[in-house]
Image 1 (cartoon, rainbow, N blue to C red):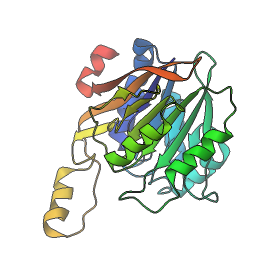
Image 2: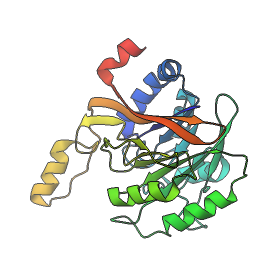
Image 3: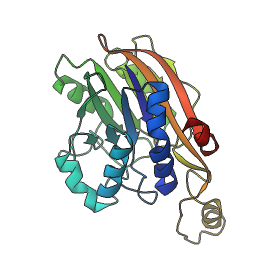
Length: 266
């Protein structure tokens, strides 16, 4: 089974490259399941029902979210009613959304997907390690393939989570920092791991935002609106191959598709 996790989709440029590239990518890479982190998809912060539906129509099977999950209040209804979108599982039980999604891959295999929020340099949340234990214990034993989106700031946090869940999940893939790391690996227990799969959006930017806006505020302390940038759009993510009989990963590789490469792809 081949699974793609698309890194943080930022604004309209990120959505547009996903819409244009994903169907050809599914065919070229023979993808069985596509997961996307979409917490920055609406104007750079949050998600709306219309964008949720746009991403599903493009070929995304499951959506994960992070610390900007509730920036657009209109998404709360989708979080409550739909089964293929998850909040960070270590948010309070009362927070809108589901702790885990169980979705079908192209071959019919059921895959569990969960999101966890880190705690270093992030908002206060419940323990992600104990939350992972709780969610994993709740899953039916026949579900072997489990993908964890660890939305965290510190690489040490992410490495710890990879080691903590190794042998119990298929992949621990990091999001949030928007910068892809070159540490993709299969851990000894069979979990695919990468600290951060990167950002899908404009890379001629500061983490997806216009350089001049961020620079002005940094130099002058004068607040500006950090508008989404537009140049050098790329789709970043990681592709993981999993043995569905055991849930263990057999390979992981980074994916970086530039806007300039779209014509050849499509």
